[in-house]
Image (cartoon, rainbow over all chains, first blue to last red; front, side, top):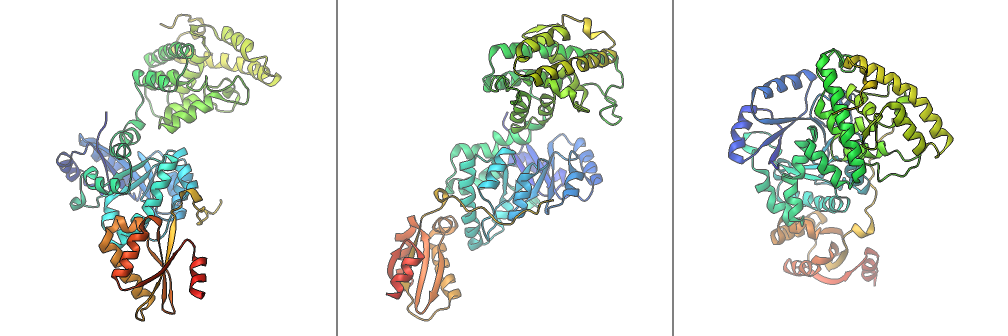
Length: 404
Length: 106
């Protein structure tokens, strides 16, 4: 579903909500330089009391790694107020940074092919604000647009996402960004499709959908989009059934299962996350060779990160068989479950761990000594994992054969 | 921790705009600043901000009664008209600064 978004630099929620109806805005992105984590939490409490869709963006205006670490995971997005070459480079080189605000200035070019390429690869779009542009006089605008034209070439060549918002700093500057930016963006030579996507479509996908978990239907669409073969889809469907059932059993037991991983938070497992991760875990299986060097789980994770499904990406990354040999291989219980479920399904049938490993030995054992010796090391670890999950679920998972 | 370099990679040639250099005569003695203001305002009035950005005019030098204006390839004819309108006599159009300086020396 497409919705109209706008980014603003102030946080008067009542005012924003009042104007949203007038201007046809569905989601406000509040971008601010927060002084402390407490300020973020207070603003979140106020947002919860409203029934409007607000998202929080923490803005950095200098290269500050401490601040970046402090803000990580505290806000919905982290942005850098760009304009200079150093800040633009900083923004696109850090995984934690999601957006580059106003990368263009009126003095000299501040973007090059390297920055544009990194922006595309890390999916860190450029955001241009009307307030920044409109505050300039005619000649200053001309120089700004001159640099903007160079940015436009880079955006088009490297398929960088670019969004255009109001950047309002007060009530007077609140506008419908689509109407205001339309003439300028079209005169600069951007295509109509690009223009439409900058306000809806891609913008919704990036800011609104990105943090949510795709539904079953959306996962199936993704599998179709990535041209995953039928046999892999059938395997993924069975893995999803197994994983979901294990998750339900653990939730039913209502143990303090997440305390270990989530710093004392009590809570049920996220079954939607488990299902989506299981469905998408072999997304890149068909496009990687039966070669020990190519890691299909890493490739799949990268594709998912590119489209903003970071939570699912980290679970997919951890499902590779020999990941269990690492110290602390799993970052969540959901990840453990998906890993185990994958080791309980051969083809599209639920089997025991032993049968699954026999299948893996047959398929991959001939590649090389290292692969077969790794598989041998993994088997006892998977059995250990099975025991741990059985304890949490309150049932011997090893004896389960039908997971329907 | 690596210091982030403040240098940009040069744009590849395929992404650069084609430029032309217009060599013109200055009628009266005029400072570079005045000349820049006059021509920039002339371009702005004629084309508005977006047109100015696309034309990308710049005074390369103005000395000894001569000036060199750089514009984008597509705006050469319009730039010639503007120079004439503002009282400057166009001498020649060149593809490089070197060739325009050669013309000046000759």
